[in-house]
Amino acid sequence: MTEHRIFSMPFAKVYPLYLQKAERKNRTKDEVDQIICWLTGYSQAELQQQIEQQHDFATFFSQAPAMHPNCVLIKGVVCGVRVENVTDPLMQKIRYLDKLIDELAKGKALAKILRQ
Image 1 (cartoon, rainbow, N blue to C red):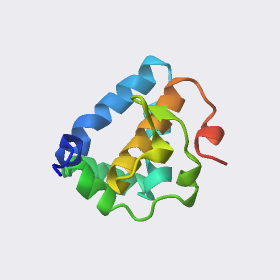
Image 2: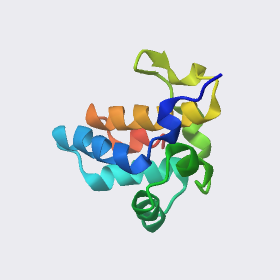
Image 3: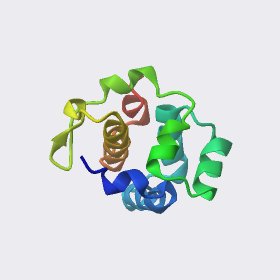
Image 4: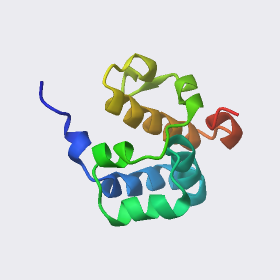
């Protein structure tokens, strides 16, 4: 089976798209960063380092300190696919992040996005 192209895509190339999506809906970079750090366990400095080093998604998630235990509560559809039904662990993590950014852009409260 071939790997998905997204796995080898630099996270730093997609990160600005996450920001644009959020900022179009009057959300902030800080909120996007908070979501990413909550999901992956990165600190703000570690997140910035990952972006500067141009790591691909596979490396970005493999080096993540710890996926948040509440990430299993992330449910819903992204790009026509239910995130809870994605079988590939890396693709599921990417879809989790996509779903959280979608929720932010749709105006959902940050506390609800972070499953608190």
